[in-house]
Image (cartoon, rainbow over all chains, first blue to last red; front, side, top):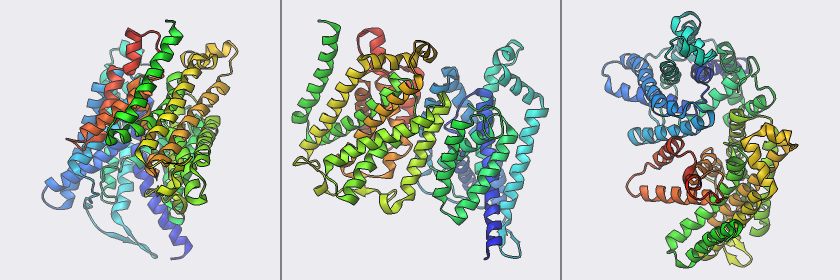
Length: 293
Length: 314
């Protein structure tokens, strides 16, 4: 294959990474933007989504498409419930104090990882894709499912944007973000908003994982990379800015695709982590948005 | 008895107990306690940054790894003796801390945590990337013949225990002296109220950098000792988990107490050791301990003791 098509392939792979990354990162960004909580266990919510999708694919009989649709609905709900529980039992009692919540979510990370290891095991297992067809380009064939992933996450992101910007729920969430004391004075149940936002963040990560799991197998340690990449995206995009997050996800996903294809994947990660550290040091407001941390 | 003599008496008594342990403990526990003392030295360094200066770093594995690989690769690839290699490891830990500190200390709070985490992750990935030198995940096993310090075979139980004890004792005495000195008081002042210390004429940036470099020297020393005493230099020892563990030990023992890191490391080590007899869920123990500590005992064991009864404990 010559350079042009090769680059196109790299960019298409990058688009898939970007799409999934954008979903996971928007979840992280929402939690930080509204609750001011840095959720280190976010990657484990992603992992739980993938692992529970495998369980659903085992339990639900019939063609893979049915099981996949079931997983697409059940897994995010399951993870959202766990996230809401974690918020009510642990984070709320810490009064959302920044450093204590980070330590607590690190603890949560280990607990969830161990739970996955104990109940699911150390193996990586595939989940069948709901459909298999190849889109034949002049130079190479490309998986139709991957294109569907990009479309699906674009739809979900649009939905999240509508929820935040146009709905009453979004209004309440934004009011809580702006000033939680005043929101409380106006009769908003801030505790419920926080639990809901944490659940939404976890659910988005799980949804991203269900979408990616037919391409990338489910494994109990798979949460680390999405966590780091989501952090990177959220910091570069500027926290709380949905648009910035999506642009940064595209930037990081595409460059990850290109660098991983032409160089080593590890090198791509080194460059990205150093980049984010330097962005935080020299441009804490992110490349596109308001001040992040 | 004045407070100063009481303080020194308590700490020297702990060292005497550990010394006696070298002769009395059975071989299995001797190895364990030797490991705990090395890890506690690492945690003491972490405590200087976190417990005393208020710098919650999530990237100390980079400094530990710098010591580990600084010493290990010199021994392995350049045939350097254990003594000079250990010194190089200490310097490497301090240097890594200085470089990270120069940049990361421009940020504060949560941003500081993430910046240190990212630098450590980049370091870990660099180790994985340079497989030819570091052998990546698999790690380097240092040959027995190379692990000799002043004629003592570091792979034998007794010398290993006493070298570990020597390192820990040096670290403990230095730290006790440091935190009771005017420099140590300024560190605590920075933790409590940075603006007020600035107003009193101290330069927060320079002071924090100094604390972080001291912390890095401790981590480097512990890393070098770990590689030379236990003969293994692997990437997993520089992973994020090794940034979290000292935080856990310090929180458990008591942040901002001199003996806290030892108490925390010892308890946690044996908690995992005993629980592994009936469950393999060691991660669960670590995770649950973190959550429970931060919920119910944010000051740790010695911190709570100090609040209740032992007001003089440094």
